[in-house]
Structure formats: structure tokens, C-alpha cells
Amino acid sequence: MAYGKIPDSVIEAVLKHHDIVETVGKYVHLSKHGKYLKGLCPFHSEKSPSFTVTPEKGIFYCYGCGKGGHAIKFIEEIEEYSFPEAVRVMAEEAGIPLAWSGSQDGARNEGNGERDKLVQAHELAAKLYHYLLMNTTHGQPALHYLRSRGVTDKQIDQFQIGYAPPEWDTLARFLEKREFDSALMEKGGLLIAKQDKSGHIDRFRDRIMFPIWNRDGKIIAFAGRMLGEGQPKYLNSPESMLFNKSRNLYNFHQARAALRKNRRVVLFEGYMDVIKAWSAGVHNGVASMGTSLTDEHAALLQRSADDAVICYDGDNAGQAAALKTIPILEKAGLRVQVALLPKGMDPDEFIEQHGAHAFMREIIEHPVSATKFKLLYAKKNHILLEEEGQKNYLLEAVRIIAVLDSPTEREFYLKELSREFDMSLDSLKQDCFAQRQQLQKMKPQRDNNDNSWNNGRNENRENRRASSAPPIAPAYQVAERKLLAQMLVSADVANTVHGRLGEAFQVEDHAALAAYLYAYYAQGHDPDVSRFIASLQDDRLERAAASILMMDDEVPFDEQLLEDYVNEIVKVPKLRGIEQKKEDMVRAERSGDYLKAAQIASEIIALERQLKGR
Image 1 (cartoon, rainbow, N blue to C red):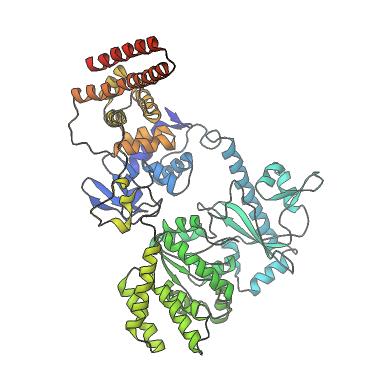
Image 2 (image 1 turned 90 degrees about the horizontal axis):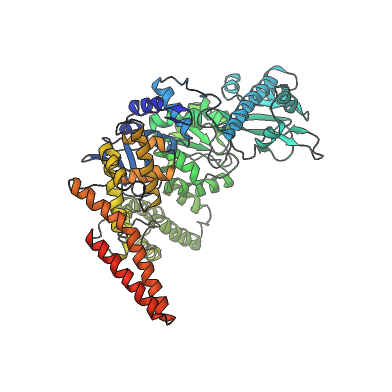
């Protein structure tokens, strides 16, 4: 069997080499709970662990968001790879040969073929721009500008900075000679169609070019900085099949090693900040690209880091942006601090004026807490020399402190306020308590989560409302899941069920899983749930299979139980037939056709006797 021309042997080897606990453990802190390991789900925000790994079955499953599967599926989901990409990466890590049929070209669909072409074009464009910067007279003004900003030739090489000349079609002609399809290059954001549709011109002209990489280190877009006067100062590639600015962070590919090592990320606003900070020793620095930080950015960072330091410009716009960024990072589960720069300075300027050592010692290594930053930011909006200004600031400061969950943290900041403004600590505490009561009233009674059991507020609540309990599944659905759970680990049970039921499962996903299982065993495979799930290539079915495998069943499985489950399933169509006949009988009675109603009643009685006779 082959999955998208990837041989079964490669899938099996990848799953065998990559232990599920080790694979997940690189991203999630897992704790032992009996035969399971549990942790906070990396795919959605939660307060108590609902993410479970079962070593003996080689699968993961989250009871909160429903994601589940084998080790390859985990990497596919967390790194946002396609299935072939996940297999390829994991195979390379394990040293497994990749020489399967079509592994380079044929294994990918047309869309992936276009992606490969665009990546290739971006890589060539970056080399062209870099060459023009470093080796031509056209590039000399741009090179002089970069050097004047303190960017060394070593950094220019490392970040592959380049220059797009002012001519209209330098890149267009370069790519055309190499037989790249111009329409595809337009689709990828490198070229623009002429107004008269007679051809294509370069998107970037007379700009310093900063390549943008994806997490795997492949160039997928560019940012171009205008060399002279004009707008826009920065021009980014448009979004394309390669590039989504809400999901990509500048320098993330180079920062990943440092992020994983110290679990800390430094967020900058601009490309030059990242580049100059790297030279100062900040190898865990990244930047968003022409957009505010998004939830997707924060989720990406949360997988590699626990702490985030925001190092935005020291001007009003930079500080306002930092204030907006804090809740996004905190929502993703990151501990947030803010590095404070002198008013009006950006990181690049600070390093230029004070040096790399001072930047690390004074700025990066001594950030303030998110709460402290909010208090400092609020203070700027009040005239503290006036009593009214002091009063208004204190009230705002108390509101900021009141949202903190930790009583120790609240007291710490309230004491600071008390000392700074010579105010009674008790009165500040009373205002804070009143604010917390008000916040509690405004909170919804439960999280926006269908699973109220995973609600941090309700963890210790003994008396749950009946309405919050999950709905009880019909008996036949339970029977189907119980049968499939046994079929997944036993070819004999699967063969018996095949003979008794075939594909007559009532739930669509269950019927599909059964059909795949019959085919899987028919090809001579031994029971192996990870391997079977890998063969499905369907997100919904993979989740369904993982969910079924996570069921605990204290009742020993035997032939009688199998018979009971089969009977429960096969009677469903008859029960539905009886219900339909009852509706027909009511309609006949309402229309005055009592003879027909009596006939239907006799048929109902016969069907009910058949059911009891089983």
C-alpha cells in the first residue's frame, strides 16, 4: 500500500523511529497519569489538561478540541505541514531514505508543484538581488546606506539582504530566461501584469530587499525598503499560496534553535531591529511583517517558547502597539514582559548609539512585567502634579491591578502605589476588591467552550448543572464505537464483524472506518493503530479513530458482548422503519382511512415481534 506514492514501508519506519511520547514531548510538557500522559493542548487554549498521549497505542488525543492521531499527524498539525511534508521531515531526521517513486515531483499534486516552482523562483530572486547589491554599481548606494546603519557585510550575507534595481523588468527577464511561467510569478507576488496585459513587470524596484523565510528556511516572500524618499517606505509581498503575513514571523527559522533552548522569544517591530539585535547576541528575536501580531503568530510562538519579551519602539506608536500585543500573547499562554527603550528610540538606534553590550544589559536582560508596563503607560495619560490627575491615575491603576489572579501580585503592586502616592493600602485594597466583584459579575458563567469540565473556574465545583453534562449517545452509536475499538486492535474481531455486519454501521464515519479496516487487514497487515490511522489520510476519520481508541472499557470483551453489539446495530433500521410506519398510521387515521391504519398497525406489531424474537 502507498499513501500518495509514499510506500507503506516508509510510513512504518517513520512511526517506528519517532516515539509518540518523545515527539509530543518536544512541544508539550507531559505528566504521567496511569497508563496515559497528559498536558495542556498545544492546539487550543485551556486551563486544565485535556490533551492525552497513549504510549502503548502510539496516539495522542485532545478531549477539548478533538484533534488526535499518530506521531506524523502531530507534526503535521503543529508545524502546519502537509502529510507528505511531515513524512519527509521526520524521515530526514531519522535518516530514512527518501527515494520513493515520485518523491521529488510525482508525489505532489499540481498545487504543490506550483508551490515548489514559486519557492525556487523566490530563492533565485534573492540570489539575484543579493548579487546586485554586493557586486554592481547600481547597488552601491543601497550598500552604502546599509553600512552607514551599522549593518556589516557578514549580516548582509547571513540575512541575504539585496537590492532591486530601478529598471521595470530586471527580475521579469531573469525569470523568463529560466522558463518560469510569468502568470504563476504574478500569482506568487514577484511580478505585476502590465496595465495593457501585454506582459509583466517587477513588483519591487529601487528598494533594499529583505527575504522572508518560512519556518523551514525557504524564501517565500520579500520586504522592500525604499532607498530614497517616497511611500510606502516598506513594501511587502502580497499574500499568496506561499506567504500569509498573519502566520509568518521574520527570522523565525533562524530563531527556532534559541527559542527551543531557552523557551524565550523577543518580539521586535522591524527587520532592521531583528538584524541589529542578532549582532548584539539576541538570537531569539523575531518580528511581524507589516501587520500587528495575530493570534496565529502567538500560537506559533507558544509552541516554542514560554516567555515573551516585547521590544518595540520607544515612541508613542510603539508603546501603544506593545499594549495591544500583551493580551494576544497572554491569551496564548505566554508569560509577557516588556523591554523599555528611551523615549523615541528604536532598538536599532539604541544599539548604534550605546552598543550591543548596553542593549543586552540594560534593555533585553531587564524587562518589566506586563502589569508594570500597563501602569507606566497609564501614568503618561494623567497630569500627576494635579490632585485630579493623581486620583484618576490611581483609579485606573487599581483597575489594571484588579484583573490579576494572584493575591500576592495584587498586593505587591498596590503597596507600590501606596508608597508612591502616600495612600492608605487598605483603601486601595477596598477599591481593588470592588473592581474584582464588578469583573466577576461581568464574566460569563462559563468559558466559551462546549466542554464545561475544562473550565478553570469550575474545576472545584461539585454540583454541576445537569445541562452542562455531555449528551448521552444512542445505544447503537456506543455499540459501534465499542466494536470499532476492538476491531482496531484485533484482525479476528474485524473479520467476524465483517461477516456479521459488513459496512452496515449507522454512523457515516464509523462505516468508513470499518471499510478501511477490512481493506487494511485484507492486505495482510497486523493490528497497528498508528499505522492504520496513518493510512486514512482524512482529518475527520483520524480524529474519530483516535477518539474511539481513547475509550476506557472495564467490561471484558467476549463473543456474547460482540453479539449484543451487533444486535444493537442491526435493529436500528427496523426501529426506524417502525417509527416511519407509526407516522404513516397517524396520517391514515387523520385522513379517515381506518382500514389502511389497521393494516399498518398489524405490520407494526409484526415488526416489533421480530425485534423481540432476536
